[in-house]
Amino acid sequence: MTNTYKAFVTAIKGLGLTLRHLFTGNSERKVQPVQAPNYFKELEIGTNTIQYPKQKLPIPEVGRYQLDVVIDDCIVCDLCAKICPVDCIDITSIKATQSYGQTSDGSKKMLYAEKFDIDMAKCLYCGLCTVVCPTECITMTNEYDRSVYQLGDLTYSFSDMSPELVAEKKAEYEQAQAQKLAAKQAAMKAKEGGATS
Amino acid sequence: MNFYIVYILVAVGLFAFAGLFALFGVYAERKVSAFIQDRLGPTETGKFGLLQTLADALKLLQKESIIPAAADKVLFVLAPIIIFVSVYMGFACLPWAPEVIPSDTNLGLYYVFAILAIETLGILMAGWGSNNKYSILGAMRSAAQIISYEIPAGFAIIAVVMVSQTLDLQQIAIQQGTLSAEKVKFLGVWDVTHIGGLLSWNVFKAPHLIVAFVIYFIASLAESNRAPFDIPEAESELVAGFHTEFTGMKFAFVFLAEYSMMFLVSMIAVVLFLGAWNSPLPNIGSVKLADWTTGLVWGIAWTFIKTLLLVGVQMWIRWTLPRLRVDQLMNLCWKVLTPLAFLCMVISGVWRLWVM
Image (tube, rainbow over all chains, first blue to last red; front, top):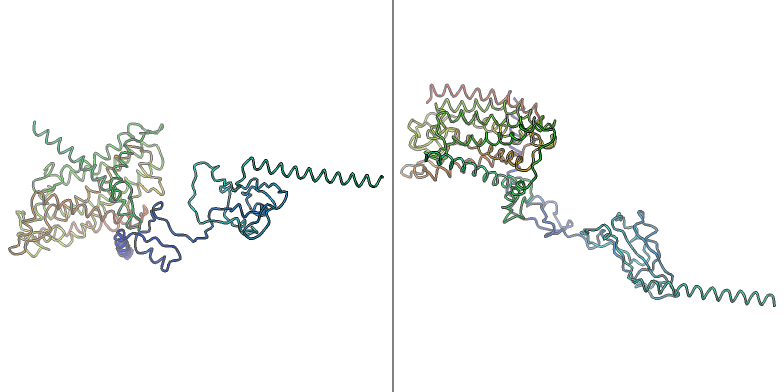
């Protein structure tokens, strides 16, 4: 008997609770960032739905979402690729014959980035690469909505070198190497010759 | 010859009404559930998502009708038809307004109650025919539940029948307003025959009928398989219960039956307890509110308003209370509702003899 009575009382309490919520539907949700004062209290007032593509929840300017590389600032040191726990960064480099420029913080650029690919499908968003980067050229942006139709589209290529340029720089380097080798051999020969004569 | 045209028109009208109500009901249900849970519900199709259920219906029409290879084909195909038709036939003798009743039989209530019970048969057929153990479990639960809850519902109804002395739904309706031929007493003491309105409704004619109304309402929730008594469907335990295997229009018919059933049981409750098509406004001296608001259009409007309010309460309950376990269900039915309903019936007898 007490059970039945309790059941009725609790049922009525529950019905009262839902009835109160039934009339919240007419006040729309204020879209505000989590940092806003009383953020969680505000959720009790109106509806909670965010109509996603139309409304977006504001997020901090420095988010940890997509990776981005400013290739002009990159010295192609390969540190990010080395520290990446899932090996999603793929870098190949060409040595330059001499320093061909400076990054914005003054580091000399000695390597050309032939390939600088990041496979965001593999990325686990740990942010280690951004920590080790000496020139802070690799960062995470606040863009979180990235959907593509092809898996391959998730591999971002940051290198801006054209195939011709790559071939040219390769040839330049090889030529320089060959010249060096020739000079070395000449010097050796001269040395040997000097020794024998 | 003209009779037949009228009959067919009435039947088609009721079918169209059932379909329209299902469209509205599903939309309302989704909106109510959304608001209760602080969501928005459908908003994209049409203004406020009003065309959403129409779009859903169109989608269901295009769906492939699949009959499982191992199913008992005859039972499987017939089940949704029987489920829907049994509910649809129940509409035949419900009064909408003074002199507006599809079929004015003097056994109306008895007929409605009998034909509604056939729904169980349809559900059992669906469960058995699907050849799926979850479906048959759902069907068995449904049978157990409906058969159990018909007893308190029946006693609660008999309590009303004893007070009003008739099974004719139109007669029961007439007795609850100013058109009544016999004396109407508020709580058995105050003669309100010419005052009418709220005061002459069955629930206020005798105080124990309020209890009977609550019992009937709870039992009717169980009979239409609505939460908190939706263990036949139990989507979390039984996938979707007896209609797991139904696709396309077959599923649509099962759904149509559920929403028609909601309306039907609410309308029976309105006719038996809440004054049917009678106005809730009483006559006050020379301000004849009850007389002014009784009539054909008013009657239909009152029936609609009262019934939709009850349907709203059903939805409200569905989104508030959790589903009962089978043993809790049977406990409530046999240990609480049945004795109470029986008591109501006994009091009704005494009331009729000594008070009215």
